[in-house]
Length: 141
Image 1 (cartoon, rainbow, N blue to C red):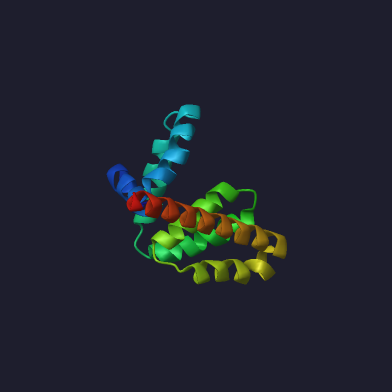
Image 2: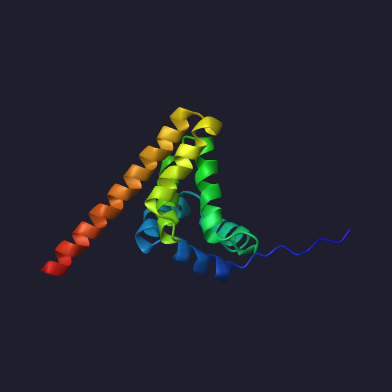
């Protein structure tokens, strides 16, 4: 039986990671994972960002909607959900669209999980505001 070769492009994975996450977000998560489980970070980046994200049939925006929905349904993964809210903004989703994803999920995943998604969004939005404020203060010096 012949199978199409999977795309696993390490270089493309790290390039995609740079598109999706700013350096501060990467530095907040990846070194700790690498210290705890050496090599696992590289596997994640290569397999996920250099593999799954390289498939052509979904846009980055569509992938983020799927990620927000999956993480919200899963529950208990708020740090990752906050990160994906930030990534959603990076790929062009408005805050209103992000909020609407969580509202839309309520009848499917339950109100408590949808509210957890909204809390994650609020946390991400607040962090972005604080970062912008700090940058403005620095620029004014």
